[in-house]
Image (cartoon, rainbow, N blue to C red; front, side):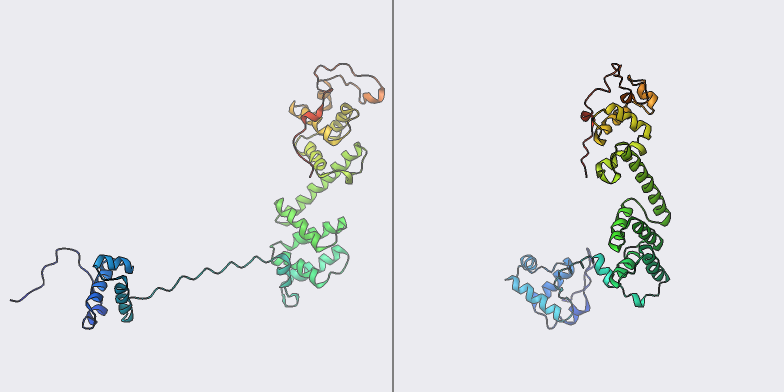
Length: 305
């Protein structure tokens, strides 16, 4: 009796030519393993041995090894550990890699020449490398670097290290372009002038102000929009407590009450002269207990930096 291929009644399986060509040489388990892998895609020896009822896991692994030899399977390469990320180079390392002799960027020559003019001295090779690295490695525009050099020269801080530290502060303040730098410098000059004026009212040199005191004095002008007249008025109310921290409490209270002028402040209390302490007259009892209280209770929780 003869046979014929029955009609397909389910999914069909594509058999690669490697299997057909090697059927005469393949053992029974090898053929079964090949068909199982083609149908399922599974190449786990333990699973194959279990599902096909093989004598051992090694039987499945030997069959896969045989099929790998004829090209049906490929051995997977072991996963290699990812290479560790290269450590970030420091600013000095970036600077040391710059060869000034080979640079043909016209800005480099201008930067080196103008910076030395701003400092009023010649810079060594290492300093020039650090300077150029601010432009080539740190992304600063040459005009911004030169503005910073000029400012450091004005302050007597004539080193590239001082420029590097100052530019870090500028970047934190949002400075990126020459226009940004000019606005920043103008604002800092206005702050210095205001702090010097207020320090004079306290009869102390401006360089004796702490960082906290400088921030407080800046806040009086830039956030609360108080003038020197308001500071002088607060000093009258402070009497013997002539400290920046004490005055900050007084001015904070006035700001909270919306008192923005000397006239408005005096309308709340009993001071009527321009300087009642100079006249020796005792002030009348204020309408509100706002001039004879412990202002330390009103201070914020800022600490001196």
